[in-house]
Amino acid sequence: MRAGITSSIGCPFAVCLTHIHLVRPGRVTDRQPKSYPSSNKPVTFDGRSLMIDGQHLLLFSGSIHYPRSTPQMWPSLISKAKLGGIDVIQTYVFWNLHEPQQGQYDFSGSRDIVRFIREVQAHGLYVCLRIGPFIESEWTYGGLPFWLHDVPGIVFRSDNGPFKFHMQKWVRKVVNMMKSEKLYASQGGPIILSQIENEYQRIESAFNGKGSRYVQWAAGLAVGLQTGVPWIMCSQQDAPDPVINTCNGFECGVNFEGPNSPNKPSLWTENWTSFVQRYGEEPFIRSAADIAFHVALFVAKNGTYVNYYMYHGGTNFGRTAAANVITSYYDQAPLDEYGLIRQPLWGHLKELHAAIKLCKVPLLAGSYETSSLGHLQIAYVFKGKSGKCAAFLVNNDNTSNARVRFQNISFELPSMSISILPDCKNVAFNTAKVSTQYNTRSRTVKYKFDSMERWEEFNEPIPIFSNTLLKANALLDHMSTTKDTSDYLWYTVSFQHESDAEAELSVVSNAHVVHAFVNGAYKGYAHGGKHNSALENPIELKNGTNHITLLSVMVGFPNSGAYLERKTAGIRSVRIQNRYLNNYQWGYQVI
Image (cartoon, rainbow, N blue to C red):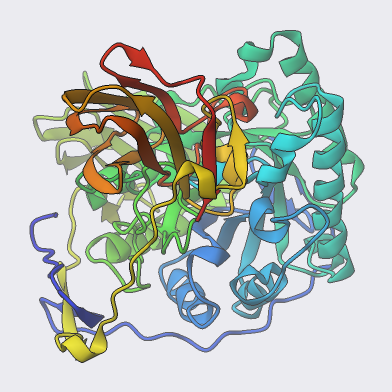
């Protein structure tokens, strides 16, 4: 954990309530939501920024995913985001959450995306709706419903007829739902941006020409839906006009190649405030100063939209997390898993947003120039026609402070920092100077489950081959067999053996965990991460019929990569001494 933030994790056999304790007395309260002003005008853009009613916009956005928190939390999360200087709430649409079975839709409870968007609207904020439908997002199967896997001839995210048919049907359904609820800004609603696809360029070459044709088709599908708001493709440098290519990453002010047209603005759709955490890993902690530096640098280089991914990560409830991803999601974000403000990150970014917005007029309407202040120091200067001037003084030296002169004034720049001068004279904010105090998070035990009367024990019967209904002369794929209904699949086989001498059982699996039972007795387990897991244990067999039962366990489905529909999991090989059982007749049971 970051110095200054403490967390009491241990609450054995208890329910805990979590709260924030400020090191320095202080209080942040939620404001009452205000009605969102209807514009009834399409959102447009030019090479400078997004525009509503012809007015250029400088926007700070925060990702909050509606299914990763409860509906009861939404108002507080959105209110705290607004207090932190956020203008836009960005969210994915989770296809497999809404259509888990083909043709069966669910938009209730935490799936109620319309209610979530209306809550954002009630707080006076905009929405960026990332429809995908592939989203990755450390979400199981990348947000695609698993029933797509069984569509004959399908190839995900390619110039493939079956996939395009189902993708088009879903995207149209989402867009038509938003239109019917009048949620696009062109209808007076809060949605000002929509996204089609997601980071496709990373895998595009795997599909050869079918990849580029798919990009063209997806862009055409989106634009043809006539939402009255721009469409974006993130991390897609060849996004076809008029779709805007955007940047994802830690340092888009450094690494972004820029818009692929002078008529498109520079947008940053994912500024990673932390990073995905997998089982066995420590949380990735990114300092408030580092995040602020790269936001200021992106704006200094003509960026006018920055989204924090995540602003509130929340919780991967149930079986929604992708393979090996923990339940807590981006807990190090400005609003932690429970929606509590994490300091100093939240406060430092709030001050950053306020300082940058003091520069709004010259930033959005002024001329732009750069000048060298030293070997590793540079000034980015914006001058408006009215005489207003704003400057960003950058020190790229990561070891030493620098004293520079700008417009005949001397400035001390801390190492690896940016000073923001809304009037080109006075420093309103420096990214490295974090004045917000750290806070601590503690948990209070509310209920203890330390009495035997509170616990019940259940024995799960271990199946044998003769009791199973599904049988095959092969080791079946775990995911294709369970069809996303369970993380657990029993594999069982019966065979004849002519000795009672000790033998060695070898099991190779590309699921995440395997437990082994021989003749009803537990013989051990193996688990792996990104690679196969292997179990090699001595076992005792009897002369005659023996039963081997293996429990394959998945901890989330894969969520990325080309040809996702071809990925498999489960038991790959079973061997006793030199005797392979792979092609024996196996029985299967989903639990």
